Image 1 (cartoon, rainbow, N blue to C red):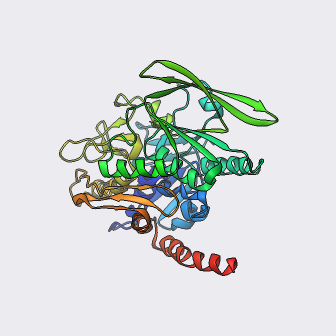
Image 2 (cartoon, rainbow, N blue to C red):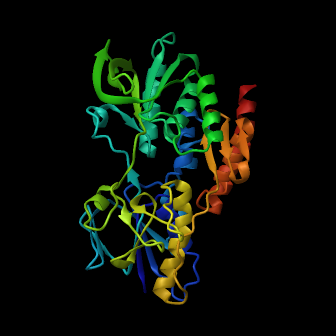
Length: 405
C-alpha cells in the first residue's frame, strides 16, 4: 500500500487530499493529512467573522468533519524536520511518518520581525486564532465610553488590508477612525484597474484615511488610563518626514513567507524563500515530493510565474492529486500545471464587494457581494459543508427578521 503524507491543511493540502481520495486507485493508498490546527480556514471569508456576517464553523470547519477516515486520516501536529533520504517526516511530539510520496503545502506566515514592536504588539490576520483575537480586542474597545472614537491603523494596502479596512469601517461606524498605511505608491498593486477604482471609492465612502509611500518604523505599547494604546513611528518617503501617531490597535497585513520548516530545508529556493519546483509541481531532486501554494515558486506549462493566491492553490491541488496518482500507479503521464485566472474578488464592506472577471465584466455593490458569495460557496471543501453553509445563509436572515419583530 502506498503511503502519501500531506503536510499542511490549507487550500493546497486539504483539496489535494480530497482530490486524491477521488482518484481511480486499484488499491487505495494510505493518505495522511498533517496540520498543527484542528480546523481548515477558508481564508477569503475570514473577514466576515469580524462583522458577524458568518460564523466560525462556516469559515473554519474541523478537519475531522471534512475528511472520511477511511479515505484520509487527519493527524494534528507540527512538523519538526523532513528527511527526504529516509522518506520520513518527524513531528514535534516525537512521532514520525514514513511516506512513499510527500506533499508540501505548509502555507505561509506573516513576517513581523523586520519592524521593532510588530511581533509583540501588532495583530496579524491570517488564521482563525488571529480573527478571534482581533474580534475580542474590538469588543473590548467598543465597550469603552460610547462617545470615544476607536483609532485603528492597518499596515499594508494589498487585498487583506483593503478588505479589513472596509469591514472594520462598517462594523465601527462613526466611532471608527481607520488609517491604511502603504509603503508603495498605490493600493492593490497588481490588481485590475476596475478593482482598484471600486476599492478606492469604497474606502473614500467609509472615510478611511489612505497614506501612501509611508513606512512603519516601529510600534510601541503605551498605557493610558489602564487601557492599551500603541504609538507608531512613521516615515513619509517623499519628504523623509518622521511622524508619530497613536492607535488603539495596529493590524499587520504586510508580506508573506514560507513556513519555517521550508526555510530551514537545504533545497533550491527563490530569493523569497519559496521552493523551486518543476511545472509538474515536483521537487527536481526528489520527484516523489510535491510542493504547492505559498511553499513553492510554481510556473505553469508556459514557464510563467503563478501567483501565490488561494485561487492558484485550489487549481494546483487538482494537478497535484492527478500527478501523485500517475506517479504511483504509472498508468498515465504527469501533467504540467496550467493556471487559468478566474478574475479577482474583494469584499468591500458589509453586503458589498467587487468582482472583476475575464472579458472585462465587473460587478460591484450588492450584486458583486452575491456573486462573490456564490463563487465561494461552490468552492467550500465538501458538498455536505456547502449545503450546511448555504442553508444557513438562506435561513439566518429569516430568523433574524422574526426575532427583530
